[in-house]
Image (cartoon, rainbow, N blue to C red; front, side, top):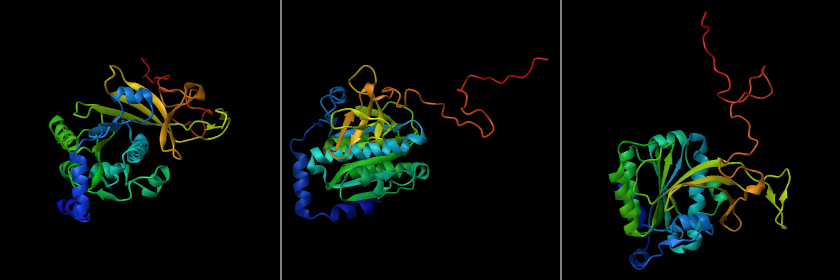
Length: 292
């Protein structure tokens, strides 16, 4: 794994390495405005360009949405800060890769244009994944690092979180921590997002209206759990691929903005083949043994 990181750095011309090192050693832009006033304000003036940001999905079925959101962020940061155009390193721990699968690059490229050079690292152990992320965060020629972990591993605590935050902050580059089915816990990341899948809204019309019965842009149920705000901030964000930006879905679009589910959503358990046409709501019926 050490050889992989070294080979990636050696592929860059020496002059380019020196130029990028000098670029990041000087004054850096601390944040990039996402064009979303509620989020930009909660993040202290935009998305942090230097340091670690945590993105977690509470359930495995939302893992695709979390990965898509991370890729969208990478595309937006690259658009506003071209110097991040170096390689993107995606490090996936073995247990996270076994459950969530491999990043499907044709699908991600169709969602948003990303960096041209992508290096996917497959460490055998979680400890190796942490080492690779720390090494990548401080390597010249790497624009951004994504670290994918599953759950809340014992080898990744507050101390290890501080090490990653310090290394990324010192290098002046973003590091995204993707936590698969992980619970919220204390960490050094100044911001933590909880991402869930959201139903697509209706297609927007040129006059600002919505086309009934249509399927619109991809959407994410985003909750900013940790920020400068005293309480979490929940939004439904729609991805505009053509303009490479996220838009806030208004509540009048026919969906519940806080939950990520349609206002008239049905229970998630499907009905049996020979039962009623719709499953009963969970918790309505409780089976108890007869007293006599």
